[in-house]
Image (tube, rainbow, N blue to C red):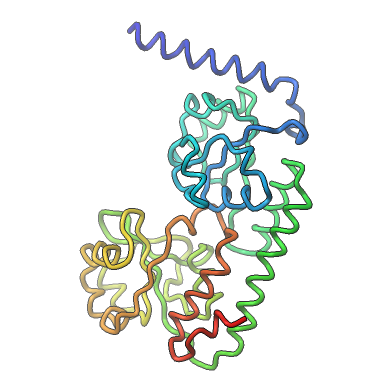
Amino acid sequence: MIKQIKGLAVFLLLQSAAGTAFSAQASDSGTDAAVIERVISAGGSISEWLVAVGAEQQLVGVDTTSLHPLSLQALPSVGYQRQLAAEGVLTLQPQVLFGSDEMGPPPVLQQLRSAGVQIETLPVDANMLAVSQAVRRIGAVLARSEQAEQALSAFKQGVWQQQQKLALIDGAAPRVLLVFSVGHGNPLTAGSNTVGDWLIKQAGGENLAVHAGFKALSSESMLALNPQVIIVVDRHNQGLAALESILSHASALQYSDAVKNKRIVALDPTLLVGGLGPRLPEHIAQLMDAFYPQFPSVANKN
């Protein structure tokens, strides 16, 4: 009982300190961008955009999906974006917390708001409008609008360049399935309005998963789709180990054209969290080479 009382006292003390520190900044329009020095990010791609606009030095904490660039791994972790703890966040005394609508749980976010933390929920739909709105909002909040426009322009230019190269390829779009291992049960497949679906289509593939979002399909259902290329995503394994992990829960896939012809592509899972991130153009190029091996290195030509 004494330990519980002490824990509650520490939490209330942190709330009081945070409220005092940020009381002068509270307003309907949000925190004064000129004095923002302490930022937390919950979402891998969101963290990457913060770095891209030059705000890495303002980051004091990130979630477990924020692994790029490597320098972010040295920052304190606030846990998984869906399972934040108010006390852990407040300990870092942030002024602003950036995340998506997946960030939570809601009661924790309300506690943080009550403590004076500005919560910025960014759009992370897998389309150009959402990424433009998100990056520009980051720029506006942190008084880095010019840097945000530059980073956004570089991203759009990179995507456009890959589309120009794709136009040079003459071939049928390969049938593709992005399979995400969750460590137990049937793997998830990436359907519409996911970063995975966006990547497949930008690289010239046909996504066989026509459902919305991520959905678990049975091993037999995935085999019936018979993908020519499988993109494997696993939080705990890479390369061949990731494929073996997926086949352990979806054994029928071993009879698919993709596995029989060894057309398996491993993808970094952090690319799929927090919307379209700044590293995606280079991964479009890599997928394009995997989709169209009969046109080697077209995607990487200058």
